[in-house]
Image (tube, rainbow, N blue to C red; front, top):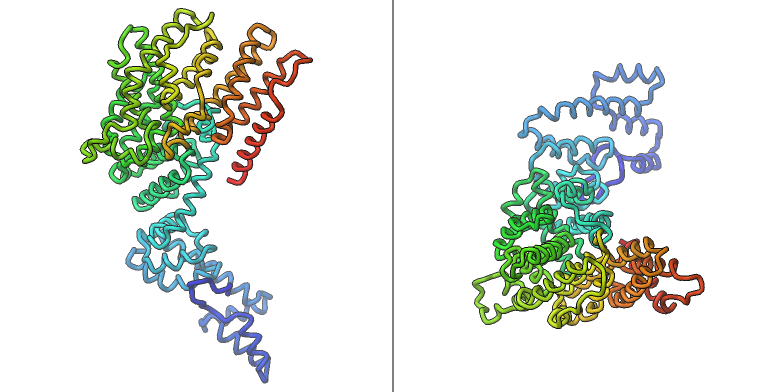
Length: 557
C-alpha cells in the first residue's frame, strides 16, 4: 500500500515493514511467509485451482492480482452511470478509505463525479491533502472551495488565475496602450484563455462567484493603479453569463451596469448614447467599489474619452451648445465619477437619498459642472480652429479657461491627452503644432496632488498609458519623416518635450519606459551624424532603470 495520506486512515494489506518485523521474530521463516501470504491473498477458495495453474505457467501472484483488480475496476466503472444515486453514497463509504491507494483512487473519484452534492465530511478530508486535491475533478474541487473553511485555498487559486489574466497579451496591450480597444467584446471574452479559465473554475456556483467578486475588489483596493483588475471586473460577470450561468443576473448587483458599459464600448463609433443612458440609470444601484472598478477599466475609460471628443466635434459641426448635448453630458458624468472622486466619496455621489445632503456637491459634481460650462466651450473653440487650419499653420492661442481647467482637473487632463493623440493620428493632416500646444499644458505631477489618494494611482496609470500611446505614435511619425528635415525639426522638439514631461510617470506603467526609449531611439537615429546627444545620459539612465524595474516586476509575476 502507498504511504498513508493526511486525514485518511490506512487500509488494506500490511506492507513490507510489517513482514520484515514478523520474519525477524519468527522461529520458522518459511511457515511465517506462507501464513503471511494466506492472510493477505484473495479470500476466494474457488479461485485457488486457477491460481495454482497460473503459478505453474510462470505468472506471479502479484501479476494475477493486478489483472483481477483491473478487470473488476473496469466493470465497476462501466456501471457507474447506471447506478442509482441512493446506492452511490454507501458505495463511496466503502471505497473512500482506499483513495490513498493509486490503483484504487479512480473509483471514489468517479463516484464523486456522479454525486450532485458531496457530504462535507469528505470535502474537509480532501481539502487537507494537496496531492490528492490536485487530482480531483473540477466539479469536486468547486465544492471543496465553496466551504467557508476553505476560503483561503480558493483565494490563493483565484489570485493565481488573476495573475494569468493580468499577463495575458491582450490585457497587457490594453493596460499599456499598446493595443486598441476591440469593439467585439463578446468575441474578445471568448478568445481570452485566461478569462475562460476563471469562468471554468467558478462553474455555475453562486457561492464561488460571490467569493471571487469579493476577492477581486479586495485585490483592487490593495493596488488601485492596476486597471487590469477593473477590466476583469467588467468582463467576468458577462463571461460567466455567456457560459450559460444565469445566476449572475440576480447575484451580482453590478451585472446590468457592466452589460451597459460593454455595449457602450461595442457602440463607441456610434457614440453609444443608448447604452450610456442605460448605464446612467444604474449608477445608484451599484456598490461604490464596484462602480469605481467598472468605470476605471481601460476599455471603458478609452471609450468615454473617445465619445466625449466625438461629441464635441459633432457639436462643432451642428453649431450647437456643449452643455445641451445629451451624449456629452452622459459621458462627462461617467468620466468625472471615474477620475475626480475618491472611494470614500462614492457613496455620497451614488446614493441620491443620502442623509449627507450638505456634501452632495462633491468633487465629481464640481468637476462635471466645470467641464460642461467652462472646459467644453474652450475645447469647441480649439476644434473650430483645427477645422479652419486643416492641420497646417500655427494654431490660435487656447482660451485662458482651457489652461486653467486643465491645471486643476484630472478629467480635463485625460481629455487633453486624447485630443493630442487625435492630432497626431489624423490620417489627412498630422497636426504636430496642435499636439505641442496641448502637451505644453500637461503636468503629470499635478495629477497626484489634485486627485484623492485612492484615485491618484488609477489616474496616474491612465495618464501613463496615454503618454505611452503618444510616444509610440510620435516614434512612427519621426521614422516616416526621416528624409524631411523640415518635418523632423518640429517632431524632434515635441518628442524631447514629451520625454521630459513623462518623468513623474515612469513607474506608473510598465510600457511607458519602453515607449520613451523607443521614441528617444527614433530621435537619435534621425539626427545629423555629428549632433550632440538629444538628452543627458543621466535622464536616459533613469528611463532605463524604470524600464528594468517594471520588467523585473512582470517576470516575478
